[in-house]
Length: 433
Image 1 (cartoon, rainbow, N blue to C red):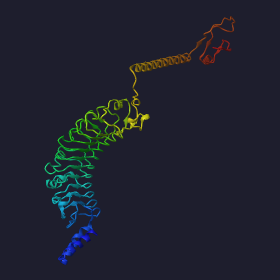
Image 2: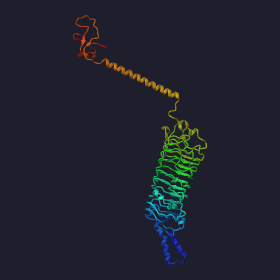
Image 3: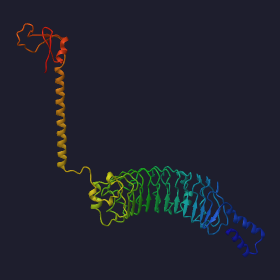
Image 4: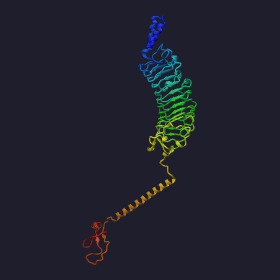
């Protein structure tokens, strides 16, 4: 509707136009409208099933954004568009781009943001200096979702990326950063390396001469932080969801301008006084430590007793996971007296516990030996042996029928067990033991 009105107004104010020119003007002007849509300052060509980039002429002079996202473009060839110098943002996100020809962005002298996210670009796509000089004009470059794997030396040349301030390399399957791969971006302010496979974050990770202000390395494979890069101008550092379980004391002390430190969703259990730069960095305003399995015990008492009044913990969330009686509670809603350790006993208590434990063990051992010996002796006295037995009793009766020395054969052994007495004439007498 706007396009037709524009053409009508143009014709009405130019009565000397020939009929042929009017027809051509209408076709050219409405040509892009048949493919794309004009929305405010954007030429919207999304979801048009495009396999190549069309050329446009006579687009409205209000257009500053070109959007070719969500199409099937594999190769970006040169395309012509009127008023190219007014374009400040171009998006080719969510295509299948593998190749970008030289000279594609040459006419866009004032482009500020180039979005190439979620395509099929590789690290080799940025080794052409002519192409780099074109892309390097942009202040913001988004390469999110391209399988780069790693960044090798001099991926971003010093001479072609001087204007770049924002670089998004998230979801790029990065395993390591080669020397000098990003170091050349001297004016870079924001770097997003989240959702990759980086495992090292040490002092050699990035050079100190970079003027980087925001760094996001969340969702990587970093488990230990010893010494971070000396990034003096860094204001925001996010290392969320990495599985970090150890941070060396003073690891962040070189980040003198840091304002926000986020360590959400890691595997940290205790917080030592010198582990975080709470006293050494005066610019620090916000710390995020939530969603860690904190053990709220005596080692965390310093948060109450040894904190400067200058640091505000009112919005600071630290939820206890251990012990069970404090699980789910914010440590700052409890008292320092509740933060106890299971092993908080005096030396005398330890000695008494050790003494009674040893006494119990010795007593039990003696009792076990006594029982064993008694049982062994009892079994030995009742043991059967072969041969004849001689009576162990005497008979004061002088009766000739009962002799004093009566022999008992092995067949008569059972009588001993049954408390029986056998005399010489075969009579059996029972007796009590």
